[in-house]
Image 1 (cartoon, rainbow, N blue to C red):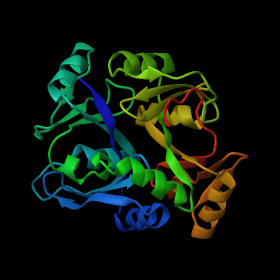
Image 2 (cartoon, rainbow, N blue to C red):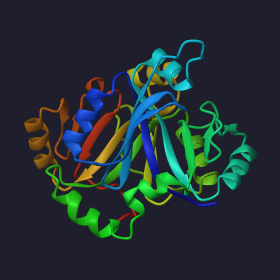
Image 3 (cartoon, rainbow, N blue to C red):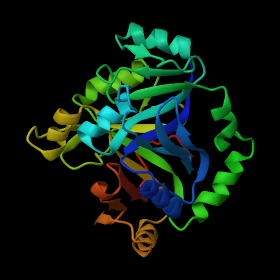
Image 4 (tube, one colour):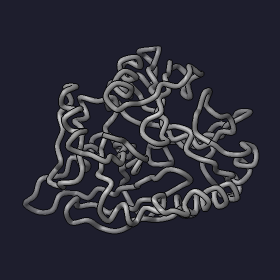
Length: 293
């Protein structure tokens, strides 16, 4: 079993026009799919940005006589926010066996090519998709010319994008979460470094080909992050992009009219309440021990 790239980070949104305009205008991404799916009863698009992909998904109310989807129930209860991380995997059967051996319940939801882990059994909701079929054909990251393209295209974007640095996931126990990603998903633990979110302790793990997850555990049980963790459960809250120059990125973000919330000497953060529950962060500082080029 081999886990590959991050297929997409799925964020549930309560409309499609706003997120579509925002992501297309800000990032100038490559769109791999877009439109309505009757199977999933949702509108969605997948945008390739630097080395990663983000999927805004507008989950729709149930049709007459049908039950609401789990996605709709989740957003109806908790509002717009990140729902899950989806990875490519070359052997879904082997992955399923490994997850179930670790006590993680799974389902294919009738797809035949996608495995969903039960959200109560993993530190953050996870989805795994087979590296076959139309998604693989549509994803430009599998093109032979991708590497040379992304090295020229993204650094010349006004944001100076280099790659997704990491995705921050709120967890109950950072050590236990690290053990799961390391032992079950073959992750590589990176050297300890400071946490992205104030008031948390964090571990960083390289998962699959080129995705780093930050497993952040709130240190104060009365903090807003701890309360969110208790209310919503474990899940991703922040996507941090590595940029060439944080000051230049800030200048472009302000010209764009992005909802800048916080600026430090090496990072710019957008207001999560105005970006559909996903905090977007841009930093010029690389992670300690990051093996990616």
